[in-house]
Image 1 (cartoon, one colour):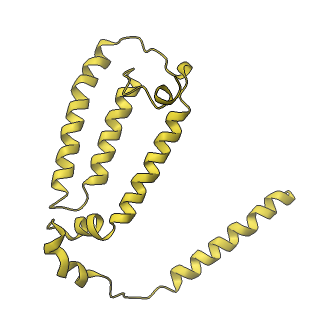
Image 2: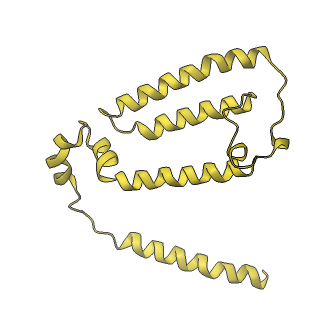
Length: 154
């Protein structure tokens, strides 16, 4: 092995040892926040404790995740050039499937978001389905919007 490989192996081993020590030193049982969630479930607006924690107690965490996704989207759109927008040859089967699957995906995402008030999950799964519908639209040659380059560079 070369010197560089040995040099990169040292931090990896240190991180692995630190993680192993952390996992092995965890308490057997923890009091958790179950009583706090049960006491405040009525004020949360939902009946499922998992959804209540995600929507109310971890609201800032969820908001910051959305900010990270927005910054990533802006970064991707800032690299858009006219040469990246290649025209896809029209395909009848692809057009029909896209016309069926995208509205169905929007309906499924709406249902997942609605059922999330009564069962675990919901928002993340709904966002994933909507993202998949957007990817399908882009891969089939549809343009969702013009991007930020057209707004700022005239």
